[in-house]
Length: 405
Ligand SMILES: *Cc1c(COP(=O)(O)O)cnc(C)c1O
Image (cartoon, rainbow, N blue to C red):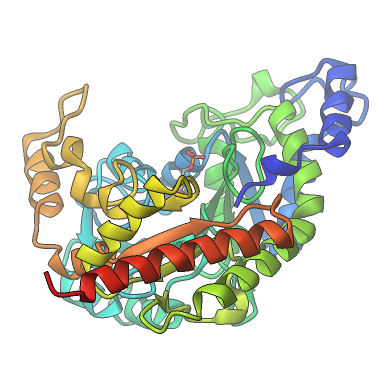
């Protein structure tokens, strides 16, 4: 998963360019910055590498989602369909624009189940927001056809799947808008940062203004800019963009290592017929940040997790079902709509209603799923050792489970 693992002189050099001029802000100061525009350069690189017309950097992946939703006109009264398995940021952004997160079940792709999406559509549905979790993609064609049929916005939360593709197109560039996160543990990092990608000029122009207090950025003088609408400050700094600029140039290297390590580990686990792997709608497009695998039952999965812990090989293996941040089961703050500021009572009731529905179909999948994060630092020898230990644990547990009590 993480580009931070390969921190190098390349990142230091880009950051030093900014430190040398001392112009840490992305806008203005045209003279003193001496031609150093790291944020602009990174936005251009994003457009070129991922194949979108426009890119707007932001301070985080969360603010990128908020920005995209605002630019797409999503707000009060709107429902956004989104999966039960994601990072909390997805619903945080929905709540931040005053919309209702409508959670629906995932399937064995670990992303939105298209049938569940169809069933959740109401006259208030405004958008479908798939989350391309753990390096791989949702069933995008199925979602596109649903959105077309019902005239819905498709907003891709691609924060975790930088570099993944679907039928030749980069995830995050296929819907009306898409976002990446460049936080510290993502495939490439800015330390903190994010981006809104879109092919629609109006979505970009609105994102550009929204992230900078509504500035229209039309004149040379910031102080004289007009503000056609109310915005916020979700700007990235030049220091953060500089890190990202070094990292994006290294992305092909990161992805190649990830894919190689993923393939080696998967190959080892394939020895065990009871281990099934996540379904990938377009296998060649998998960015391979994680290897996600399923065991036959929750009981076996829990026993494998416990045994991996005992043997000291649990770090890097995620049992999301018990995780506080990525699966709805443990989102008690959301289920109780615990916010610091008051929500409109109607919104609050809807949030609670949608967060506490029956998600047994998701539970049936997540309770049997373990994701192994793929390190860029592993040697072949280490992967072999790790894989064999995992196989040993699974075999041990399976034979104990089979044995009569
Ligand atoms: C990381 C992440 C985000 C938010 O990114 P931040 O940069 O940490 O705010 C949003 N959605 C998903 C699925 C993520 O994994």
